[in-house]
Length: 522
Ligand SMILES: [Zn+2]
Image (cartoon, rainbow, N blue to C red):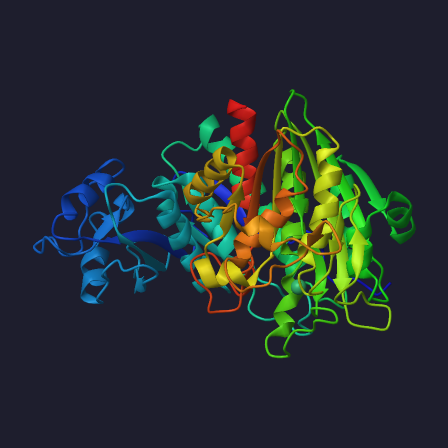
């Protein structure tokens, strides 16, 4: 096994509660919103809850609105922001030197966009992320965004500060090192609890990102399994790792079939957290550590992004660890199939028939539709635990991106739970969207020689057909959601909000919010 140069758990910035801007603070980050002709009064009211409303251009009713930034009241900084053209557009950054007016040398105003009443959590989270990305090299910042939404501000700063640097031989600009989150009462128990949770959530997202970003020469199935084992053991989870011999003994034909073309054999990892309560939740994540497509090989252009084809697995590993850290009163088990999909003399062929765990036979018409084959084994195994709820997530189909773009996960499954997961995903800013499983697609998966084919014979509704395939393996009575994150798990475009390039950690925050909701409401 090669040396693993990257830690599985990167350190984020130090986040602390503060009642006033400390002496060592270099930059004070404030929020500024875009006022519309009918939005300015509500925006001003939003600011009024924590501060005297302060508008950079008080004589212009449509000027931008500073939010909760009473620390700037009585200074000339408001007027300076306005004169520098600050408008409060999404992602806009305006810097003003304070010249002694504040302890911090600089004020950084970050745009939240237009408001409809108070800013949303996600507006605050994204603004904090934009600020954090721009503050690389800064040792200590403070912010009033925490007065708008403490948890969202903390998450935004932590997520926006993330950088994957493990493979850089020379140190680059250091990430923002510390943030003081200004709050009205630093001794408030609720604020401390909110900050603890936000730190834990952001750390889990960073863990998922780190796993996704680790290149495929160092993150192959056995290496990934060892990292998952370490993360699980450190969190006090029960850990089980099946190697290729154990997979063969157990009849995991999907995982073995997909992995047989690689010199680096597959694994199945099970991480179990027992937090009490009566509800059992299964998590399943696709862990293709690199997807060439196999014999149905992909085009060369962009193939390097297939290092992210284990993002679903990374997300469920991070989520079950997080569930333990948050001590949720649930039983949660992550069942994580890991394989490398390579073309070789031992690779599976189009036309092969494999026998999935549980006995269903599948004709492999396209070896690049491999995710569903490893997921099917894992779903059957997860359902054997008698789970009430099952969430699987995968970078499963290019069709997800065609249908919903690069940032919107598709959520499919049993209708009630699907809608619940999508609603929660939208509330946390990951924006999952419910999609149907039209019944006529099932016949398109018929095979003349096996129980099922792994693809349909047409191009249409590929995300939906993949979910229909998976539904064949979900036990009756299980509330099931399938989250396709083919685009959203990996950002190949410019950084935005709290998301840099590479692994995004989606859908960790959706899954932990769903688990929390189940813990609270059943
Ligand atoms: Zn594939």
